[in-house]
Length: 88
Image (cartoon, rainbow, N blue to C red; front, top):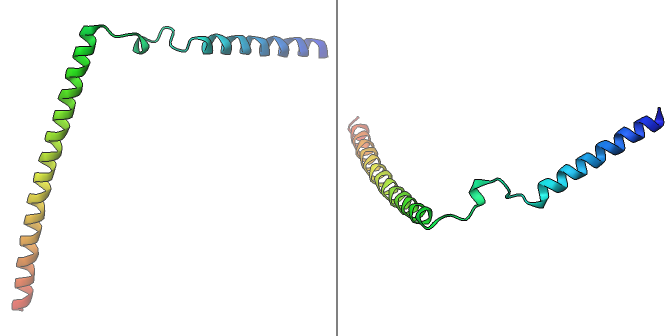
């Protein structure tokens, strides 16, 4: 029984080591994201990155404008509240 257990566990360990070695030998094998892009793909990637940067900048500008408008509305409401409070 001990020999059988030792044999099976040794075989399992060996298979695990072989599988890990194979996976670590070339981690990029079969991964399409690590392939060298074509010039057309590089141009498209650059266009997409530029577009995303522009969209992000416009988005933050819009958010800042909305924040400023909300702050102005809040300040008007606070002024009105303080005026009403002073009247009573």
